[in-house]
Image (cartoon, rainbow, N blue to C red; front, side, top):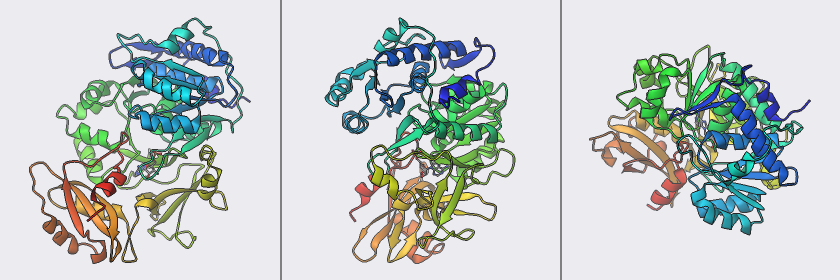
Length: 506
Ligand code: AMP
């Protein structure tokens, strides 16, 4: 059997290939036939370059249907797709290209000068461009070259263990590492998600996430491909555009920030969500307050799930059944999730420990880092996620932080999420982030960074006084800083490394 992921998707295309695959925000339509032919042309171009098998194809391109075709063409041709965040600039791109040594780099024409310089310096043989779509037409040298080639392509035979993609981790705590994902990893994960989220005939996905990250590519786009479903494709999230298209959609997936922004958009109401059957949130913690306000405002209960680049999705609140605020739900079928104490035993219910996982979705290791890979797996084959959490008596996981964020103050473990939840409940507080900063006495001192609600003045002394009545003294922040907003990356994750840099010296 050919385990090439494209063959799985191809088997799920609608019978009528003229059905709409993607509708763009400015009403341009791509059919499933366009996808089949377009990806064949690009696959033919890649195949004509006589690259060694396993070559990496790096893409630093804006979101477009053609960018998605490039991904699928890479998979079809048996190469390894390497998506790069479009926000990355020269220093970051240099690191990824040097590290992954892609044979082909595809970038935006505007960036061709500096990207090609980096690529050629690192022995990439080919640099192509994909432009941003203009008037429904997309150009650039990749498409121009591919246009002359055949629109048929025999999808290459791949084994389940062959690599399909390398995703660089978001690196909010350290240097980014390339997570190697196989055709089998990606297929296993999307087969499960397709089932548990009950993808249905006639589903339409509003796709507002970026394509360079697991959420937009392997959860959202894969889901639609697996279901032969149409996507309404927004080049980026913008609440007005979402509100405009939502009434025709049945599914929406976003990072928590999207939900917060939708809630503050006056045009977002129950009518906009009329046809929606599922709102999914992930990539960063969804505040209980957002979960509750969304329910009140729309009547919909957001389904929160948890996963990471290295593993795909691991847990999900149920489609049918209770979706518990502040939890990411139980382990997905076929995925084994455990919470382990520092001494290495399985934690009791509600006991906090390290989250470890095993399953067909778990990656093959970090690109060219065998030692680092070995360190991150236990002797019995579990991957150490680096997340800290607890299991409740019904098997639902709550994430309390990253192990690198764990604060040890005066010998006591302090879990930032716990303190953040208490602070977020205080009057006048919009949100908060808790970090540890070096302290001569305690080793680390708990420090809070807070965003106040509009028009509210927050005083450090008041926050500290309120917290003293609610939590143990060792957990109470020694300092509280008020900022206008928390630094977040594109996926909505708070960049605590930046906060530690800014507030790390008392
Ligand atoms: P990435 O590989 O960029 O998707 O980042 C994965 C990390 O994001 C995980 O290890 C978690 O720390 C965090 N994450 C993902 N989903 C959630 C969630 N629903 N709640 C809290 N953290 C999450």
